[in-house]
Amino acid sequence: MQEHPDSALALLETLDTTTLHSAKWRAKYSLLYEMALDKNYIDTTNVSVLSAAMNYYMRKGTDIEKAKCLYYLGCIHSNAGEYDAACVSLIQALRYAANSDDPLFKGMICTAISMAYCNNYNKEEELVYMNQAVHWFTLYGDDDYIDNARYLLAGAYHNNRLFNKADSLYRLIDPNGRYSKQALLKMATNEIDKDRPDARRAVSLFNSAKNNPEVFSNGNWYQYAFALCLAGNKKEAEKLINSLQYSESSPESYWWHYRIANFNGDTDEALHYLKKYTKYREAVVTAQLTQSIYKAEKNYYQLSSELERNNARESRLKSAIYLALLILASLVSTLIIVKKNLDSQKRLTSLYNKYAEAERLLLLSSKEATRHSETERKLENIQASFASMYKAQFSRIGDLYNKNLELALLNNDTQRAYSAKVSEILSEISDNPELSKLFEERINKDLDNVMAKIRADFPSLGEKNYRFLSYVCAGFKDSTIENILDDSNGAVRTRRYRLRKQILSAPSPNHDLYALLIK
Image (cartoon, rainbow, N blue to C red; front, side):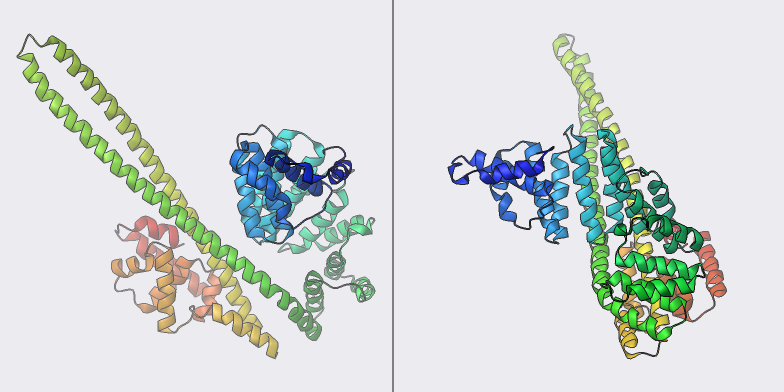
């Protein structure tokens, strides 16, 4: 199976499966057959191939057999584009494999989880699991697996716009290995995606990579043309674009064709390709928003569950302390009586033992109180992390608001329709009192009732300042608030500083919450 998977598959297909009367052997055949398909890059989407193995091993199998079943089930779901289901199966597989001493298998599971999250536009989780995969493959010690994992991890850093980290990993790729040319190409795309691209370096990297043109996709050629435009080589870029006009198009090529036209000042052509790209991008934006909502809800419910568990733990701790105090009081009373009775030595010894047990209980209670304090600290960190994620998400929505204002200026019916659709998402961010109230209620619900507390602690600030503070707490950038309120950027910064100073200098039980959210 490991050395000659094609021969393994051929052997399995010669077997007469009707002779496998035992559920155990049918399960073994089912799992081996799916493994052989996977290792021969035959991406089946038929879950029934694995049904005999799932039915048997999930009831009677070892943890590693269950992990293998769930891993290959996750692969089947990924092949079918069912990435949510794939993540559920693969994460369960990783739990069953936790005590395994097989770092290669753990690395394979983490890689599959990372790719499923990548295809589902969940970039943060993609990065988390690909980092774990590199760890396991490094422990395994095979250079090819390590090279592959580094290449995929660099791609995850790129997707999260951590371009310098991506570049540092691409440089570690074996220059004589199978990913060397792809790494050069990815470094070139990194360079033109940066906020301040180095056009000459990008062109140099593209030139090095194009010695192997088979690694270039259609989109990569358009990226190369864009790099040439940035470097001032417009004629060479036009020549390359003309040679690509009869090749198969893709959403990626539409985007780069748009950027090239926009860079060259060709507004009509830029709008033409932007419309084509927008039709594809709408589905991607929907998927990304779905993942953002999923992550926010997941963090919220995890936090709620943790709070409920801590409340129950605190209640048990208080009961234990009260019980220990009651035992101590009872023991002291009993000891006074026993001391008056010289004939009760045996009873006195027993009571001393109980007293020692009570001291032990008190010590345990004290340790539990320490653990409870540590839990509260972790919860505060979770809250800060949640608030940071929430503000970052609204910062992205603020960027969308700014882009929406730019698109609304274009004199094009389709673009205005697209702008209107985006405006529906952003309708709560307006000067309409009712909609502003809805937005403030959303902030209160997700961020510990912060706006209601500000109104209670600072009743004289006025509605304009309350509205301004709701945008600050949500995490909008100064440029976004400037566009919403039609104010200058300098005035927004000054106003933000003044209100923060006023609120944080006043005594309030909510000081820590304000310091966390008003920045």
